Image (tube, rainbow, N blue to C red):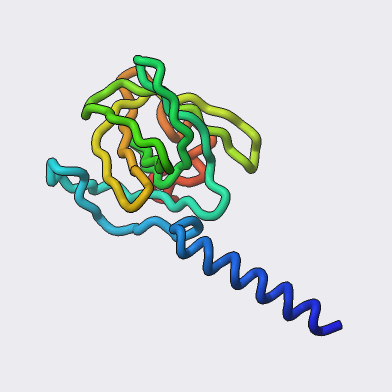
Length: 151
């Protein structure tokens, strides 16, 4: 039944192609990157999030709620992606982020503030930094996604 194996390989290849097409499963860049319109350079290494990343909700003080997917993480902040309905948030807006780890089934909450936004197609990326008084990222389940040198 060699044809069953070939069908399975074709389905796997199609899934990888589709994941690459929509940008899921593509590793984050490990190089230095410009941060938002400020032009400041992020010098800390960033982690890589692969297929089936943590997902959750982002809320603002006015009661807005958005489904998010973790896109990138560093010691000082988190980047999330939103599909569809895009919030109109101001820089430095206070936000609450709840992420659920699909591997360990742990849920963590983070007090964040908005640093930057970037629209790509139907996706909105938000760069968030930890607010003063928040627990560090390395003390959450996200420590697994930090680069080895940064954890």
